[in-house]
Image (cartoon, rainbow, N blue to C red; front, side, top):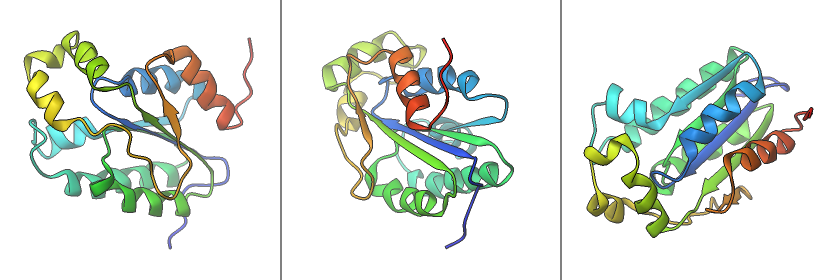
Length: 177
């Protein structure tokens, strides 16, 4: 066990199916957390760094790189937002280790908006031209709770503003109206 971060660093993991609102939430949460916030996106590691645009392989390699980047950012004093699908097969063990080693506050949120809502949301994204409904159906994992953390389940009725407020409260962040 190698401790990471400090007592004041915050780690937020946003996970769930494609087009469920993770990236939107990460971008909305960043300014609310303050100056030193790193967003680490699974899409960037998988599609750009490892060049796996069709989500066919390299998820395990991406998990090692993503958790390594998160540890480094936490050790540098950054709050970290991890944003991605993060299936249990490839990420549960790595995230458990990161969670246990993190000295600060951690919040984990799984987006579970349902398959039909995922398809509807995906149709309005720029990525809809890259992959379509068939891939979304094949990749859809649905609710996959972590066995070692009581993560928050985020349904389709939760707005981005509501979720940002919830996360800030969970992290003990003082909310000023």
